[in-house]
Image (cartoon, rainbow, N blue to C red; front, side, top):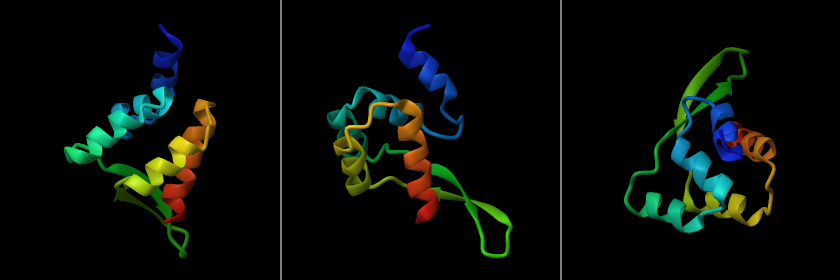
Length: 91
């Protein structure tokens, strides 16, 4: 199993493997193609409400967020994953 496959195996099942692969490969063109064709899947995000309960919300990554991640220069997969999830939960 390649290093990329190992990383993808750790990615949450509800999150798009295509998005994970695009981030891992830093393939901005591929991510842009997904956006342009409308095939960018919704990402299921766990959100804690103020009353302490948890809901799941579908969120779409937009071009601006993707550009932020691509420009971050971050190559550690877990840091990328946690950064994405944190940003999604903050919104």
